[in-house]
Length: 251
Image (cartoon, one colour):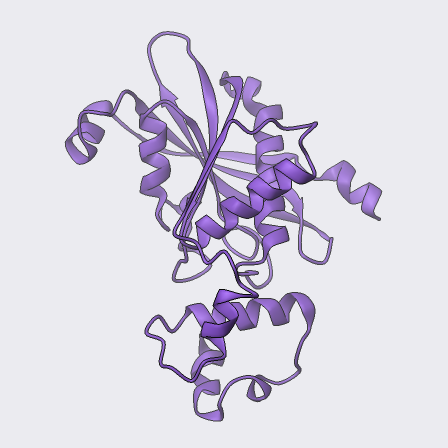
């Protein structure tokens, strides 16, 4: 099963044009550092889910556009916590503007939606290291294979970054590339921004504290994610106070 899944993952299923923005528009919004107009493409591709069953995931591809033929570096931007499974970069939501900026600066940019979001099935495995990394790795592989079909010329450089949840996801990707895939994919540089990096250490103390926490969705997201992946408890009242269960179920 592992062998079969590996054979059929990392394949582009579909590429859908989502629009473009001119350099003039981008300069008006972001400033004079902009160097290119950009095109937006929604990419769907195959990748295993957290139970090693083949899934179809999605993400945003931002392509810089210049009149002259140009070879571009590749950059992966991992987005932060979003409001729901369709609030994602491939729908031009979920913080896609940062991917847009990188595209305007001359990076072919990938912004994975993550598993359980966009086109992928199931519950989103929030701050789950392995799937944050694997969804990005398979999008890199799929795009590099498919790029010639879109006349996209890539050099060997790969940059990785992300913010908030994406900081955790980009560090997970960095770790996977460095420890498991160094012979396949060379990483040029990485910048992991404002992520909850130490889930089992620092973040654990926050999550089990009796102190009020103002960003409510982060904690249920984490508990529900890990229960989805690891099957820790059978009933929500085993982990949440009964007064909150109905609201969490609705969420």
